[in-house]
Amino acid sequence: MDALSLLRTLGALLLVLGILVATLSAVKRHNLTMPGKWLEKLGNGGSHRRLQVVERLALDPRRSVVLLRRDDTEFSVLIGPEGVTVLDSAPVSPAAATDIAAAHEPATPQAPEAEPEAPPLSFADRIAVLPDIWFTQDAKTELH
Image (cartoon, rainbow, N blue to C red; front, side, top):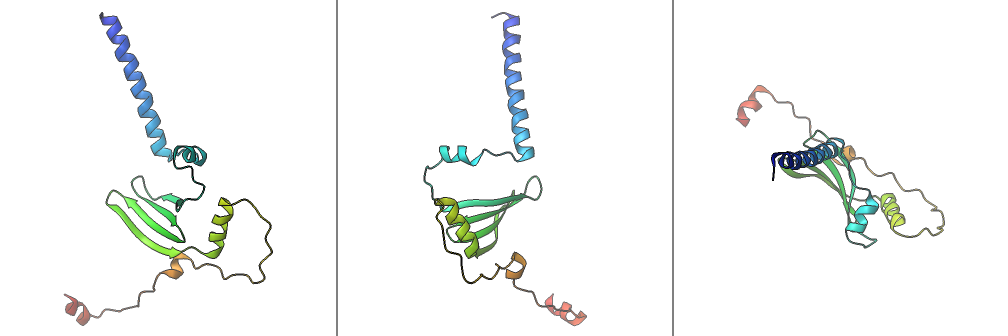
């Protein structure tokens, strides 16, 4: 193999590796994902899944909060380099459960509901309120 052929081969290899690195950095930077239809073809073909990623929010380049739904429960999960932390879990509201069922089943006409349901509690409403404790100098020394 002469020098020109070797340089041509190395140049083609570097070009392919450069395109690969540029594509991977663009995917990582812009949080690009494959469309759901393609992923369904690659994964299990079942129409009903027990586990869903409802929403993902990137907090910074290394950490994100993910809302997962398993059966009738939603989990808020913090994912980062430190590991995975479950922030909150709560049952799915009936309205959201109806939306899930409607997405997986063909549309059928339904009678309107007679009684409106109460709106689901927000995340802040489900967190227990911490008591207001005013520390005095004596209480601080007792804690130490």
